[in-house]
Image 1 (cartoon, rainbow, N blue to C red):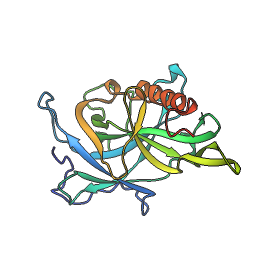
Image 2: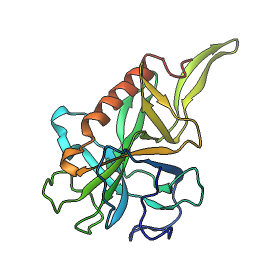
Image 3: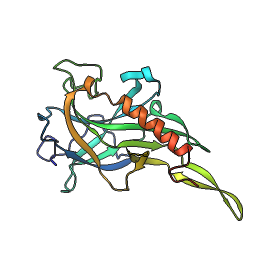
Length: 223
């Protein structure tokens, strides 16, 4: 693993950083020997949220939101990352079986901000475009309110929380989405390619459908 934040360990914060984050998570970078990697001139982190499940959504299906981050002082991880509550445009209405939930689902992207606007242009494929360095292996899931189901007890029906409000981190495995343990880092595998070649939309859409299907069938945390 290697730290990929410029400034020799100095904190890096976006220019629009406005205060304490709503949640914090660690980030660990994994560099493959098979990838020809160049250091980012203007390193930035952003979370990209999925805003539609329509197959023709393309890069228009994503909305970006800046993150605060700094190089971690802990040897076990590279970054300390702060996440803010997702903007309203990022909320998807999900059918979770007995609960209809508003959720935001995205991935964290480490990129080289070539044009200096702080935003990641997914449509650009030229040499001077923003360059995606790595995308988190895990999916970031924000739940607006707890996802619940009904449990029949001796006293009647009681609500049981299946997924609490707030941030969660999942990976997609067989047979379905698996939540990462609390305190586990996000993992970033170096890709180093133009943004247009790294569009995460199809993967985000597949994960979102799998998450909705899995909870609807009661396979995760069922009552």
